[in-house]
Image (cartoon, rainbow, N blue to C red; front, top):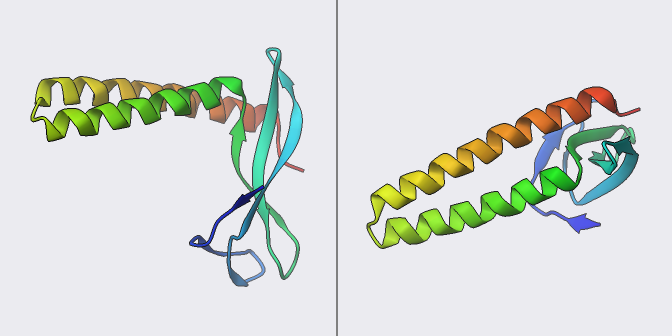
Length: 112
């Protein structure tokens, strides 16, 4: 369980609320990896709102992208713009790959 204090959303029922708890649901297995959907629940109508489908590949890509962001910041502070641009390019490549995987998982495993 992840606790969040800042996200304000509007449900289809019209209720505005802060997302305070993120839940996960196992959706199945794809290419030998567990697929999980992350969602939050409207406190008024109890509708579940999914926002992320994730497997091991996505988690690894997110970790690598965090490293690229950290290195990019270090290179910018050190005024090594060429290296920072290379890290940015690697970050963008990882994001593109992650979006493709997320889209495929979302399509294969629709949230009930």
